[in-house]
Amino acid sequence: MALDGFSDQSLSRRAMQAELLDAETELKLAYAWRDERDEAALHRLITAYMRLAISMAAKFKRYGAPMNDLIQEASLGLMKAADKFDPDRGVRFSTYAVWWIKASIQDYVMRNWSMVRTGSTSSQKSLFFNMRRVQARLEREASAQGDKLDNHQMRQMIATEVGVPLHDVEMMEGRLAGSDYSLNATQSTEDEGREWIDTLEDTGEQAAEHVEHDQDIGTLRGWLVTAMQALNERERFIVCERKLKDQPRTLESLGNELGLSKERVRQLEAAAFGKMRKNLEAQSTEVHQFFA
Picture (cartoon, rainbow, N blue to C red):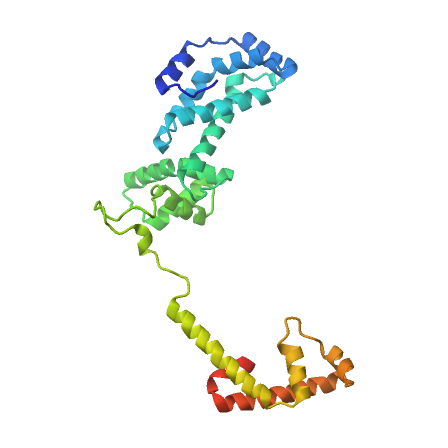
């Protein structure tokens, strides 16, 4: 059933005017669609039960979604139910369709509740749609016994009641606390009020930090160049190949190139680092950790 262009009232009126199917007629239509793909039978079956879809959609108006959208989702669930319904099971179509209609509406409500994904597992869906009701009942029961539950106790009791982890309750509580707000909205009603986005801390690197970083790198590079100059040609070669290349060479490959054993290359490398450490310590004590 196409819903574009119809108001909530006109849709309800059309649904209420649709025929009421008895069990025998319903079964014939279901068989005609399943076995013969008779679209006329499908349309008649769906139209007859649109009043059920609209009735269920109305129960979710409190979540703030437009009624027409809720009816649209309910009708999609109804069509899915008709497509998957097996008349051989001996169950009335309305009983089977209820679950598909409800699931379709719930998925829509959760998708549109917040820009942040609310949850998609069955336990999270149960928590989303039952948390407030369970909380109200627990508060009534506690009040009747003269008790007062703090927030932590309430969350733990809800988690136990619904059968979900405590952190899911804490997360959902934040989701249900309010709707999304634009960061470009102003903090006051004045035309030139500050936008909320202006209150967010800039976690990026600040200009002063960038300058300091570049200066530190430049200083360290100068220290390393000076320290490298204290090495002989073979030691500089080993240090460059072992520590300054994107893909450092192994002791064995350097030994083969220099005609030395792997152990001898390791000794030369250690001696070179020792010379560099002494040279750097003489320039600044701030680089101790660099060669730690």
